Length: 186
Image (cartoon, rainbow, N blue to C red; front, top):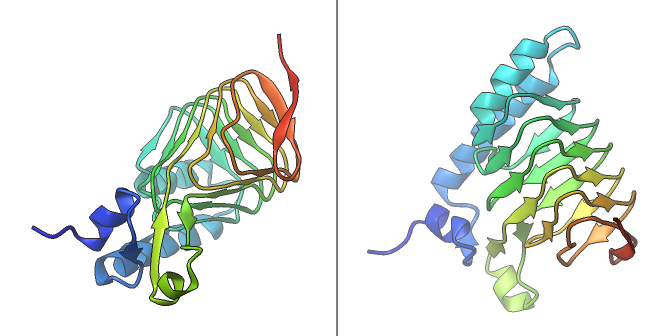
C-alpha cells in the first residue's frame, strides 16, 4: 500500500504539503493559534487548554507568550516547565521534542520543515522535514534559529541570534552563525 503524504512527512521523506489532509490539519492549527493569540493575560487556564488541544503532549506547566505560530501542533511534545517568550515559531512537520525546564527567549524559531536544494525537485512542490530534539534545562536566546534535524543536549545554552545547523552536546554554551561551542560547563 502506498504511503499517505502525512506518513511520508512524518517519516522525513519527500511529500506534498498541498495534500488535502495536511492542508486541513494546518488550518486547524491556524484556528487554534488564532484563538490562543487572541486570549488576554488573565486567561491563563484557557491558554493551557488550547495548548493541550494543539500540542501532541504537554507537561505539567507550560507558558507561551502570544503571538505563537506552528504548522500542525500535534508534532510538538513539550515537557514540564516549558516557557516561550513573545513571537516564537515552531514549524513542526516532523516531531519536536522539548525537554523539561526549557526556556525560549523572544523570536526563537524551531524548524523541522525544509526544501530540496535541487531546484527541479523543489519546483515540483515536494518538501521534507527532519525532527528536532531539545534536552532538559536548555535556554535558547532571543532570535535563535534551530534548524531541521538538530539535537540540543541537556543543560546547554544557545546564545541569542544563533543559527543551529548541527547537533549541540550537553552542558555547553554555544553561539554564532553557524552555532558552535563557546565553552564547556562543569
